[in-house]
Image 1: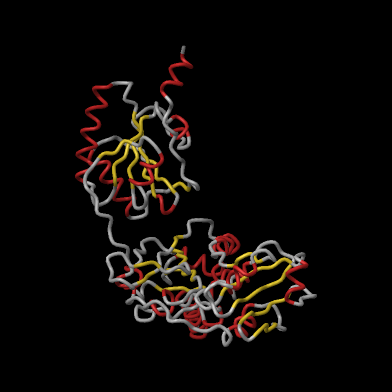
Image 2: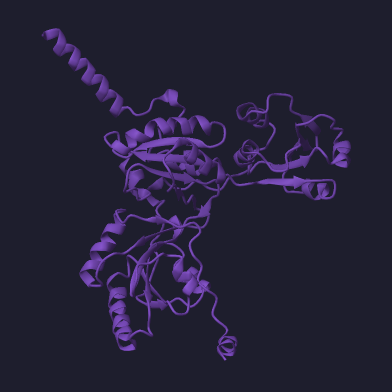
Length: 407
């Protein structure tokens, strides 16, 4: 009896450990990101970073863990993969507004001036992954975000490439017409230290210029002449070869830890905007949340006027959370049809441009119902529908042409 109880206890501890420790250093996943080193490791690194924000007790996180390990293996040498335990790193989670778990964010290579910061203060604006939670889907999406910093080089533009403001240029001769993910990743890693070119093995004139006869072949061009690489075409080996060859320039200042990484809120004034063209949509709803009402002014002009007054009240109440937009369904039928709305008007969806998604509203148009729904959306519980790309509004109809057609 005592032995059985002991075995059960040992089994319980093993299960508990497997839940608490979703990842280990052997998984090739960066696990040591903290508030103190996030800026230097992630923001200060030109590589892309794909980060899962998780909690050990989260069932969905436990389900994702095996796939995340596969993601790390697939992206090795291309993109840095990390996992942040939000229970231990609450400051990082708060800085990037992590709400649902797990959340996957990709931190790009590009630095951007920090909004509201001093001149020369930079940060990165992450993209949130919204697709299937399979290793292949996640890895493919991440690879698609690699910037292409590789320039096509041929015998006609060679001199222009060599005049680029880098003391060392890197050229890969290959039979491929486009840069591979590996070459894109290497160019991204050294983006501040050298220019990267891709040359076609069929460009005989260019090949003869460099004395190249076998392909693929990688080499550097500098005032010291040509230096050819003779190792395997793998990320770690190529990076180790380039590291001492490419000079390190003065980099932009590293930002403060991520307590200031959160984007500054959009300053809004209460307004109800009619969407008349795509330019209005893009300028009034560049990011954040936007309530988009679909209205039919011709059905009952008096009711329409009253509803606009109601929206004006809502715009003042929700000015910090969401913009208020509306579209005349008679003027933009193609745009309206893209949303697969229920029968009758008014209808409402929440536009979420940065996630390329909408959240349909199902309910009555009272202040209480809209406030409750908006709260759910802000908490990430609004059941978003992916729309990539988001619909574009119809161009304004030429009224003279329309009247002529009606005759």
